[in-house]
Image (cartoon, rainbow, N blue to C red; front, side):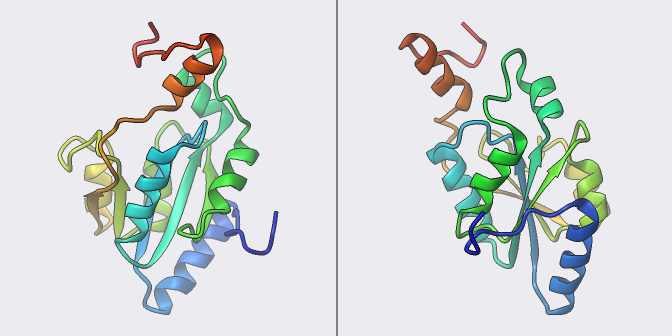
Length: 168
């Protein structure tokens, strides 16, 4: 990984870096996802999260959790490669891989000021909304309309036709 990339940190390292950033007055923004096959929707989501200000932390689902969420044959790329790609984006400050089924424990551990989610959610439908409020943060919806999907891109590469979100 180049020196221009954001660090990929363990949870323990991340907690320390977040504490240091907070001491320096930074706002902590958390975005998360599988990022299985990087596409423009991911880029717009992360750029929108960074525009909220401060340090952008991206939590990436582990291979085990990405498989549980996405199904057979997924993830398409291993977690360390997905993390390296996300870390190479200039809008990203820190990356971590989480192995829990949800991002809730990561939220509890780093207590972000803002939890950024994509436009496939509303502030009231974000599954972690109660946890983020519990730790004193807020939810922000960022990015463009959910018109892009790794699942659809993978389907196109398999048979030349778009695969729908329901797998058909």
